[in-house]
Length: 221
Image (cartoon, rainbow, N blue to C red; front, side, top):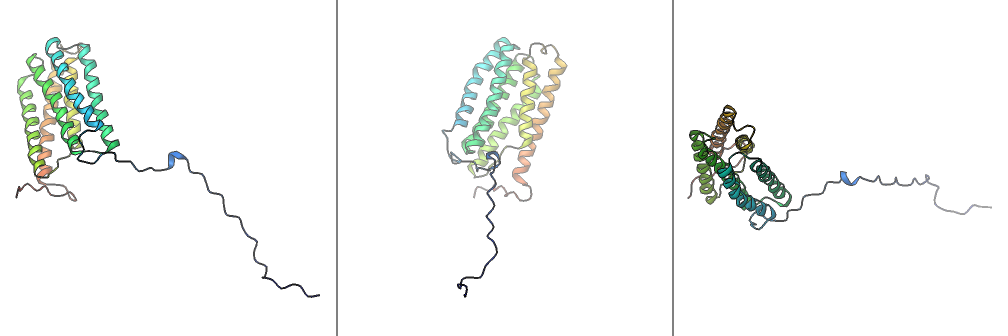
């Protein structure tokens, strides 16, 4: 009896391997940019504006009471807000207005504190005037270049400079350190050195960018 014709026997089918589950934390989710670079009303800018407003009563407190623990506590709040608005900007997307307001708020805080402490005879006037001149000059320089379409983003040295300045202020408003004039002078002059150094770096980077960076167009035409 002949066997029925059919397809030749093939190899046994092998089941496909089950997919391996990927942990949720291992999945890379791209960041969602909530605001474009021209936005103004952003959470980061709101925090920055609040820091500028709250700096005024803090300066009045330092001017009237000098070194006090209340001033130290407010210093920590204002310093924390600086980091918080930076985190918000990274989360939602950096903006041109934020790039202008954030360093402006830092300068208002530090320069205002330096002048107030000099008026209280806790800081020497010479380094305070050097720091003030540099901060005002660089802010004007940024504004002029910004109108020409040239951006001067913050550098790591600039961030270190701001932290050193704020540290010098903290030394001067801490009650247990206010009589250690040598420590206050040291912090002030170190901050002054970093301030001048970072200012020179900003000007140098604007005119001589590193390889791969666009050349700043300083010609208004």
